[in-house]
Length: 91
Picture 1 (cartoon, helix red, strand yellow):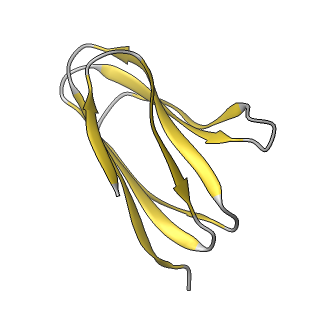
Picture 2 (cartoon, rainbow, N blue to C red):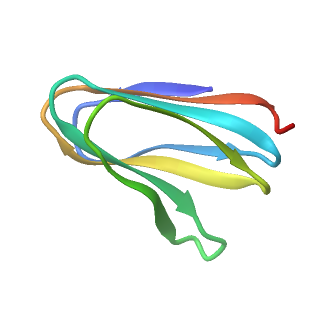
């Protein structure tokens, strides 16, 4: 599990997840802000999976292969709390 807070813009929270596991991403935006969820390609480039999260957010994802994901804060007006929580094997 990875958790933390962000008070400035930029990439945070690169975590490796999978394979065949579910994982949860929680984001608490206190007042204003914007966060993208990004996934690392084999070339090393980052692609956007979810763009422009501007309110509290919680979602369960699953991945068929080992993947590296990160959160990228694109705007911040207050502290943003985040968590990437591993779960069980996909059923």
